[in-house]
Length: 493
Image 1 (cartoon, helix red, strand yellow):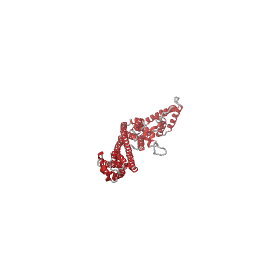
Image 2 (spheres, rainbow, N blue to C red):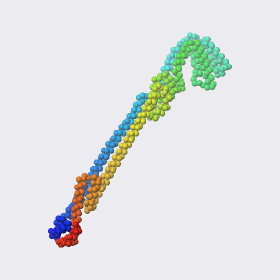
Image 3 (cartoon, helix red, strand yellow):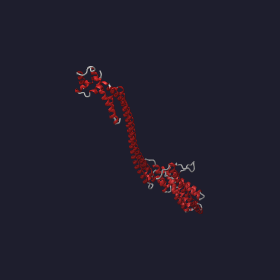
Image 4 (cartoon, rainbow, N blue to C red):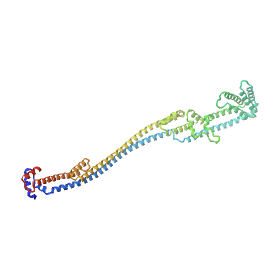
């Protein structure tokens, strides 16, 4: 039936609570309400995916910003820790360099062979100089002695010579001496009796005098050594009386030979012994000189004697050896070296004090450097943890962004599969976006308003559908009011 025909009946429902019945009647039967609901529903179905996609872009942008901010934050922190680590490391290096500079009190390290070469030259040079001086003086004094002896005639024919030969005869036939001693006296007697000049007499003296020299012997050899010494001394006294210049010559030779005795000992000979097969080459290797002479108090004193008491040279060599030995040693190693070498260090004036001072400073510097290196390590560890925390945070940001994108995709999928639930899905989307602060509030408010409008429209459409069903049921299309109109108004309103 025509809407205009039943409008008065609908209007008459006003006394049962229906206001503006004519407007409702027009909406109920015009079909406009259903169209509006359909259009709003379709609009919402479009708005939800669009909003979700916009939110996804926002998620990506926010994740990128948060990642960038996190990276910048951690970079600043790591830079700060890196600068602190560098500061501590530099300070530690400075401490170690400072300890190295303490060598300035001792000198600069050098090659061991170079030091050995210098020691070798000084030792052999001193020996040569002393030997040359002795030879020169001996030649001068011996010339005076031999000249005086020639003026006196043949020694064996002089009173002193005849007296000494008679002494030897008495020894040859004495029962108080051993057969070997008698034989030695007989050999000297024969040699002197055959001597034609003073040179031959001196050769005899030196030959038998050599028997009494050298390291002390034991037993029978010791007896012979002592007897040869007594006989040689008696001959020496006889010669001194025969030619007094001889005593002056012998005293000078002895005086000059004394320092040379240091080179003739078993220890002293090592430093100046020459290779027989290679003239001019010393047997000892240059690198062995420092460790040989700087071993204990006695070896240093031997060096001092062999250098003719040149204390400046001893100090120079000892100091250089100490520097070479201490180079590269830790404080613990230096302390141990000082303990092992303290005896000979004390024989060189001032050296022990300087070495002790260096070792103490090295120990202090090492401790300070170790502390700074420990601080540098701690700072580096903190920087490492900051980096790890930054990586973990960036991973969390990426994970959160991925989860949010996945949830937004679900909203788009839901609205595609269940368009009739558009308002419910829309409300859930708005809540999710709001809870996670994924869109500006103005956009969220606009979306919520659209959803609310759809809800209202959809509600009216549902009522319209129910009204239409009731009108059909109760024959509203043909009846014009009465009981039927009352039942409609009661059920609906």
